Image (cartoon, rainbow, N blue to C red; front, side, top):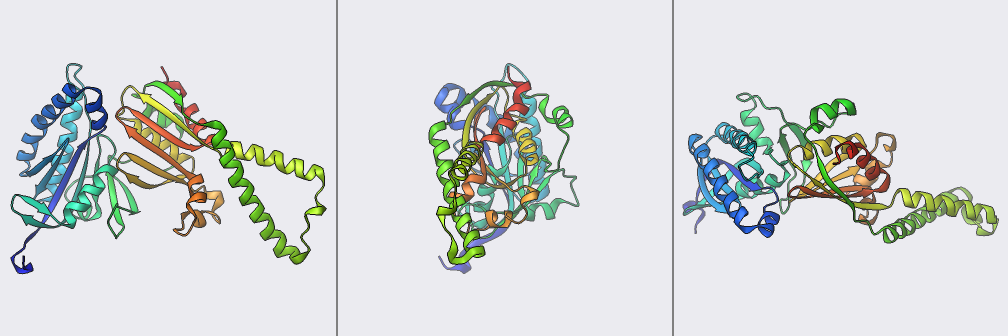
Length: 357
């Protein structure tokens, strides 16, 4: 089709998705289908009220077009408020959604729409927290003078199969500032209840992987330093047996501390969990770096390691080295799987201990 005949327009595009729906469907198909019906009965009138057009349903999600960014954001906020209210009743089948909104150029093809505007909206939707909304900078700049938004800005976000990096805003805001844990308890933790915690770590395998990695890293660093200082005069014969034993003990201790562990945690209610974990993890010196589908990744970049942090953040850093500093969380319904450095996970679990039932 000649480009002159292609119909284009600027529009606010919304994607929605039910959190953990695949697991819900696998556990109970009847419940899943009922949730879909309930979602539609809640969302349809709200979309109509805000002059939106439901382009199509995609399994458990919607693709919706708006002529106004203000209407799109207000619609998303009302959707989440309506679902939260619905979930307060014990008689209703509880569910949670994520929403992503982008303002961009779209191509109209019959009853469907295509283009970068649609692609980007679909990529940022998984970045929203459960019960949350994620918008691009284009949407934020369009509505910031018209709506009062309490949101968190995240710069330089990589989106799958999208060349450019994007600035996004998450609603509601999740603070990355250092906070007092007692205050955080009052704000975020009051509604958190843990049903079970299971250690899924293959301890021996994890330990030896860390031992090998630290041994190689230590050897390379030692050779580099000694070579720089003493040149060709490096000699392993200068080591005493006590030196070697001491080195092995240090390697053993640090390998255990820095080994990667994995836990499965099941919550009674997932709604405040994302905000809680985000607050705790950022207090340990991590930074949010990526989210794809239901996986969130953080990178350990403590302030005291300011000389080393640029190396870890660099795109040229080998994955085998960088992965040692990554903490990952996978969301699946009311269950999360979290893997990261042993001493950080143990500290994180200690903070969560008071909520274990």
